[in-house]
Image 1 (cartoon, helix red, strand yellow):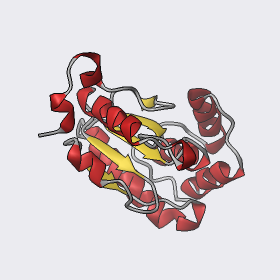
Image 2 (tube, rainbow, N blue to C red):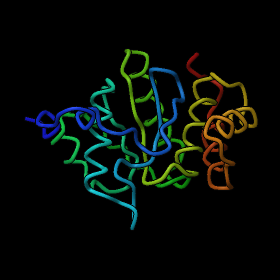
Image 3 (cartoon, rainbow, N blue to C red):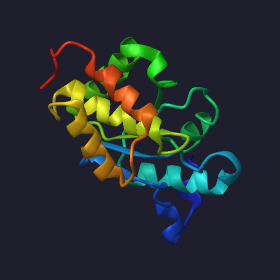
Length: 176
């Protein structure tokens, strides 16, 4: 039995993860790692945020964190997860395309995904903008960068822009 099944009232609903943002409404969202990261990480907050993910009908969490730490917490709350470690542009187009293909397959099958890394920073922003280019949803890299900057209310740095460039380097046989 998930620990949240013992909770009553508003606590049974959990709390929305920090920086939660829809990328593709009702299909793909991003956020900071449930519970936070580093010195700001809180176990109780992690549990409450994972409860929120489950209660709000997400089918999978997609963790981009390079290591597998804390993935067992999703199991404890009966939330399915996929681990796709992502270090950055040095992973290359092969790894990016694999992540993008997984996202595309699951979202087109109707899955609701919540993707995260430790923080909602350049790794996630670049990956999202690159995905928009890779799928052909946004026609070019500069438009994808502006779109994601507006969506996340933050500027993308050089790391994110490099990820987008790697994603855009693949021939234009995009999924439409």
